[in-house]
Length: 559
Image (cartoon, rainbow, N blue to C red; front, side, top):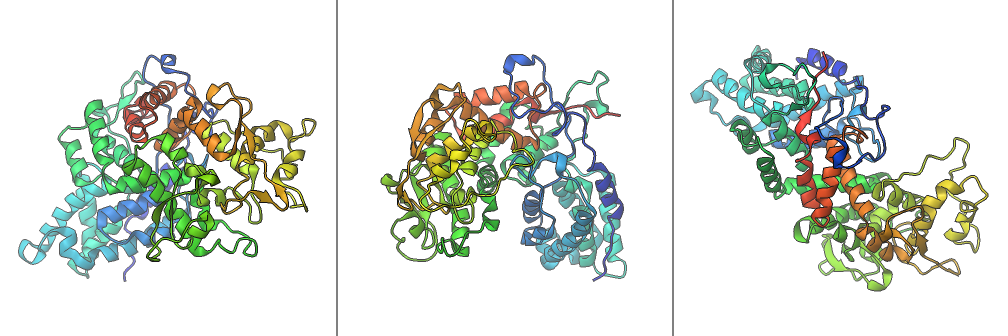
């Protein structure tokens, strides 16, 4: 195969535009961990400056799958995206290295070769009767619109037809289309979510926010709800001007949530938010936890998706159900871990079960996958489990340990429980107390579940005490001691702090950045209020994101 590096200049552009971070972007001085000061804080719309958003590896794979109708597994060869604040889509770190540039070429070659295997189905054109160049030009416009997620300009068409000519010269019509696809997949217009359209063709001189074009709104909608590019129906709606009002956008968002693609996207968010995406690299001591097999890990990841699907599309799609529903989805690998009967049939497929009430299981927080990730290879970790609740459900992350702190797992001493081992952290006179008192009293309530999520009543010869407490809170719903994770989950489900935090986490994921304290105050405040008013409806939370100033506008491009 001839390797035609047609888009070398385009990749050079990508390398250049990807590496700048505007002042006030994530990591800048204007960022805070949680910035909703309330709707009254900003009477006019404000949006902070944000770096260009490159497609993540997950988004890239979904996009090429939908664009070319091919197996996207070649995308796994792209470098993994850096995780920041729990998510892998933070625009500030989605830069392009020389390795990215190399892999984009190689992956595009594989995907394009697979795509042209059935050329008539791909192009929708009969070259022998219509003519090869006419078919190529027709494909350039239809494919280019979906690849670039907007109307194709004459310049776009010329670029793609030039790529076609390079492949066609000395080759075939099929090779020409293949090179055209490779060119498109290496273009900044595909790899980045470019938002440069200005009403009237010029930026406002007063620095006012710029409303996004309807094609740009379509792209934001599709990557928020589908983690993939817009389809022809959504692009057609943008072209017809049907994404011009908040009401139209909300209606379209609700319609998009009914697509199977939404299930994949929402599961991706929850997997990152909970840390469960790390299951594939989580290890356990095989002598202590023989049940933690490769098959069990895969089943744990699948259970998370099945549970989220159930809550979001078969249940009442509320945060309360996500945190408290006492159900699981098990197969032969998971049933022994949960202490339930092996499902009938033995096909390996997950089946819904009601979990034993005496175990005190509740929603996401007692799933085997979550508990396995938030633990050590040979023991549980009240610190990790408590830190998750404090950071990802309360949005109150404790400060990092000092550089000289010993953060290795404690020795499992004979006759000592995790509560005993945590005593040194919770010694009010020790240097660890200020941070660990925020995490450990929460995490110790999880001790009735071991390092892979099996229920237990004792540790060694000692009865486990699962009393817990959320300290340093003014939220009445969280006040007082609780006994075990189920009581904790019930408190969390009633907490306005948790509802606000979940809205914040989804806002961060949707925006590809942390919130800015000043500029995002109104957007985040209105989002939190809408989520609370909906009774914690997670589908309506996604819709509410699309109604915020941060979703509908961008700051002006600096000259």
